[in-house]
Image (cartoon, rainbow, N blue to C red; front, side):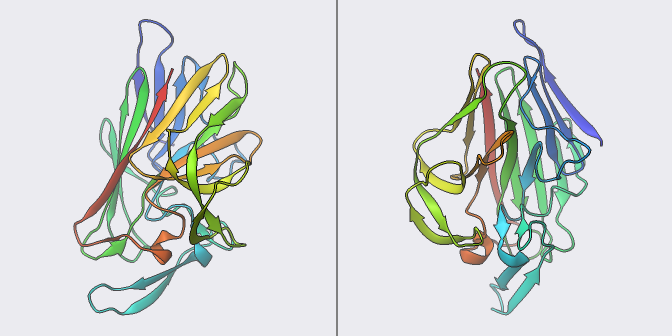
Length: 270
C-alpha cells in the first residue's frame, strides 16, 4: 500500500486526516477528531466493502458482465464481456483494483486498459479543509468514443468510537424499480421501505448521517443519482453517481474522443 496523506490542523479539536492508496485510488481513512469514519481494511476484507473508492467507467451492476455497444461511427454492434466481480454481474467498474499514478500532492490518475476496449483516463483530486473533504473526479475518452459513468462508493461505519449508532436522513421523491437480479428496469416509482439497496433520484435535501453526541456528516454531490445501501449491520453506503446501475446498456452516456464527464462529492462535518 502506498498512501498519499492529507492533514489539516485546527486550533480547536484534533487534526483532520485523509489517506488515499494509489492502488485502487481509494480513500482508505478519514479521521475527524480522532474518529475513523470509514470501514477499514482487514485481512479478510472483500475489496469492494471498505474505504471509499471510485467507480468508473460504470457504477453499480453491469448486467451479466456484458456491455452491448453500438459504434456511433459505423453502427457496428459488439458485445464486450467483463469479469463477474459480483456474480452474475460485473460491479463498480474497473479502477478500484489497479495502480494509480500520483500527479501532484492532491491528484492521482489511471489509464483505462484491458479488459476495457476503448482506452481513456480517470483522474481524482482531493481537497481537505477543517470542515470538509471534496473529491473531484473525471473520466476522459481517448481516441475512441465510449460509454462512461463516474461515482464513489463510501463505506461509513455505523458506530464510531464514541457517540450513538448512525442514523441516515434523506428525502427522495423517486427510486428505480429493479428486476429479480437487481438491475433497474428503467421505471421510477416511490422509494421503498428501508433497509435499502436502492438507486434514488429527485432528492429534496442532501443525505445526512448523524452519530448522536459525536458527529453530523452531510454528503453532497454534483451528480444526481444516489445508490443508498443500508443492509449491512456494521456500515451504510451513500453513493453519488452520474447515472443508474447498468446505464451503459440501458441509456448510455457516450463520450466522443477527447470529451470528458466530471463531478464531485463533498463530505462536510459538524
